[in-house]
Every structure is written in structure tokens, then in C-alpha cells.
Length: 172
Image 1 (tube, rainbow, N blue to C red):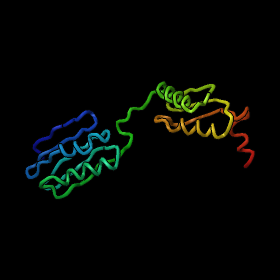
Image 2: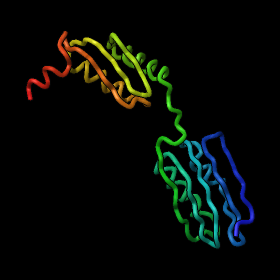
Image 3: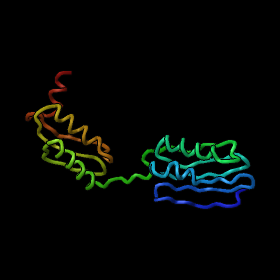
Image 4: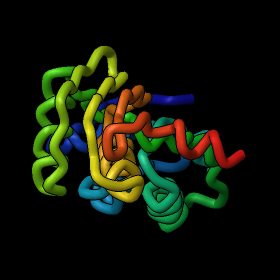
């Protein structure tokens, strides 16, 4: 039977609930301390007798292990039932199309890659360019794919004036 339920928030990166039962009081401060600086999370716990059930969402396996370890170290806790889910994208801000376009433009500028057209719609990127080598195209596409929020790339890129895929498909 749960007697008390309180919500604790630390610097908006950890959100944890603690509960008190007739036999075990769960102190969530060590749990907060173990995962608060490791990413976004929302972890809840309650106890029945000497068994603590913990559930919620964290962004890494390391955070999950830390939360469970901190609960297991509590006086009177014999068993921890772990129902925490790991979701690496939990709490991440999804960039707008304008932010993605700006990030892509900056990344390509750093590479020294020029392009003619760059459009971003709902995370889908359309880019056209005329580059000197397949390697430059590969670097450009890999750089764009590495940017958080990019879901897909469509290209009408040329290599020395020829369509990017034309030479590749002729060889197969």
C-alpha cells in the first residue's frame, strides 16, 4: 500500500518519483544523482514490502543500470523489478526544416562542398550539385546523413557533368 507519492525534478534532465510503503522507504536522491547528468529521463518507482518496481524511460542502457543499481543499494530493498525502457531519442528536440537546412549548409561549407539547390521538407533533403569525384559525393551524402533530424536524401548530383548514378549502373 502506497502512503505517499511525490514528484522530484532536477534541472529538467531527470524526472523521478519516489514512494513510501509500510516497510520500505525508497530514497530517489541517489537515483537522481546517478542519472541526472547523463540525459533525459523519467523514472518512477514504488515498493511493496521489500520489492521495488521501477519503470519509465531513459536514453541509455548505462542510465538504466545506474538507476537499478542505486535502488538495489537502498536499505531494506531485497528485489528490484526493472521495467525501465531505453529510448535514445526520448526528450530530444526535433530540429525544424530551417534548422536542418542551416546545419547542412554549415557542414557542407566546412567540407568545402558547393551545391546548387538545397531544400528540406519534414526531414527529407533534396540537394543538387556538380562535384569533381564520387568520393566528394560520398562525403557530402555521409555528412548530411550524419546530421540529427535528416530522414532521407534525394539528389540530382552530377560528377563532372554526368548523372551521379549513371556510371555506377553501367558497370552492373
